[in-house]
Image (cartoon, rainbow, N blue to C red):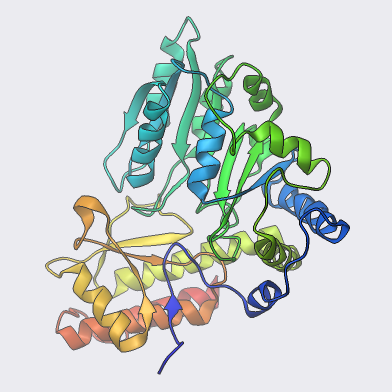
Length: 384
């Protein structure tokens, strides 16, 4: 059979049919009144999703573009920053910061382990001359399935009069509660192919008042990612450059779906799917890679003992047309990752756990009675 592929990876995520249909419309002029209405509507919808009164700016680019924009629009060459590094994307922000000539202090944790807020607290408290200008971190570390304690780390940043928080929320926004204004987060970056339920190509940056004040002193080079241009045009319901028009059609459709479901229901659904996935995996005798109680609501990382993780992924893809994500860098072949982010329902969770259990049984690697894993998953789904 063709065209039966089920994406159970952390991105791109499945796209609803009505969102796909909205993209099939003929493009319209990006300076037209009709397009301005879409920008106006989606800007308000994005504020709702971010739980902020600040403008949320839309860039045609990936989540990396949004993060890079957050960094270069608030900092200057030579500024001291703290970067949290406990996975592939934490590593990336260290590289980006150094590429722009920033003085980077790195707070590290082992892959699979969350960042320790006390390490940030210690460095910030020792900065009596207030030279640190930003703390840069990933909320949901996609490479390992870890959720970092953004709220606690951000609270430590707020006790420092100069530093701002720049947060990669690419796989957490739309999956768990991130009240930007309530928590006082300064910069939030995200991408379209995750919780937004649309294809890759758009990214989003929300900036607090403190972040815009930092922008006034920023001297790092920028042109396409100059957020002042985006702020100016978003207030005119427009965009400084030619945007991905049909992705705006998709954005409007997906955010309308999300508003209909409601934020609390969205967060509860992701939490239910996370628990059902994790409990099913443990019930069939597999190990979670992520430290207990620090799993991301977007993705679960699994570390099978004495089994090549890539062979499991390949078998599930061949036999069930379900695509799982592999490990990155030194974790390749050691872990696989199950995405449960965005347009995912109970059927998808039951399917992937059943496929995994069936695959292990076929490989002769299932060390518990068959059906034990899926029974646990169903129990969680029926009772949460």
